[in-house]
Length: 274
Image (cartoon, rainbow, N blue to C red; front, side, top):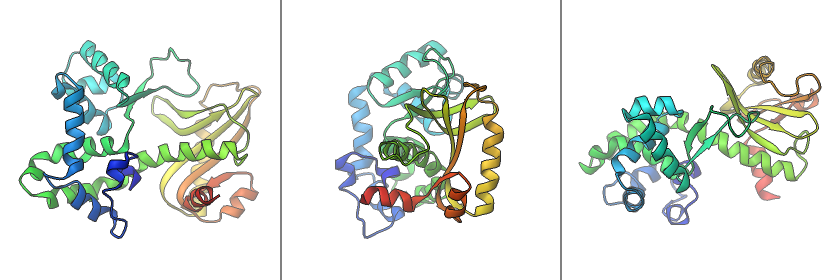
């Protein structure tokens, strides 16, 4: 629900928790006269000049074209204009720019993402189906959403996992007290989460929106260790730690005893209850 409706109270109050996510999307978003369907577009039209260009950029980011080159190719706009519009969207708090956590602030390896989940969902699924919804064919749009929601949730779950680790950091539930946390990428290699302190400790973590067997988790940790060798940060003296966050993880106790940090939705629930 959070991945679709975001954190805006006015949108959250539209949710009927007695029904599943697809019912709520169908009833609360996929109607041309629904509040959420109209409101997101209205907010942006009020805030932005030349909204069609901004909408094209936001649709590009929501569809997975997240660096400057890919956004420029997707939109067909001049690179300088894209840079300008991205700056405006950042200033308005609609998008954010991230760099690999081990890079300096002047890094040119920036990736862009939409900050609020409701806006990300709207541009990923609703804007491309706008004509269908206006014609009253929301069921066609819903079928497309059902086919793509798991992939979309993989991205939002990664952000939720980062929030979870920051909370665990305050409760000493992670291998060390970290000062920085973010993602890392270089060419074709990516690591979902890396956390760092100022004493040469580094925590590598992958995030999967799926149910993981013990064997799958160990295989993923092996892949994570291979990728970690390409992360250039205090390589001669660092203390490495590894972890996995997933929807469910089989054999967590055994994996924890082996020295890995593994968390699933049960751990998220415990944190919320405490």
